[in-house]
Image 1 (cartoon, rainbow, N blue to C red):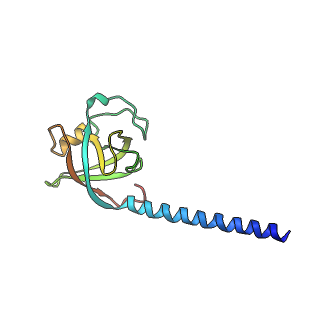
Image 2: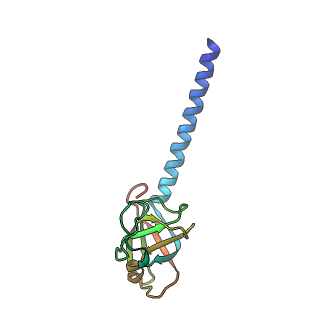
Image 3: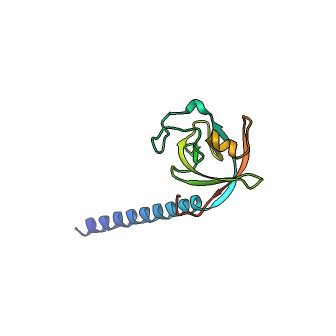
Length: 139
């Protein structure tokens, strides 16, 4: 009977350590998402995607919506808010609402309207600074 109690106590301790580790890791990742900055490759998805459902919110994609951002599966979580600023101090506040199959790492897609506001009239890719505003963990 004492050996069973010792075994269950050991299992409880292991589970508590695992949970504490998971909470610490989640907090660290949340803080990383809540604030900071970096340079990202930005592209846009064109109007051919208009009306298709977006991954995060299951709403139809609107190429005229200035707030839409998409990242790869290894990018920012759905709902993460990003501030994109150009060298001329034009800034947009975007929200990750979709996944981008061709995006990975430091690469995001924006709507065609956002692309034009950022001053990128031509097709292609641009490197831009991305700010992660401190609006709360994961937001």
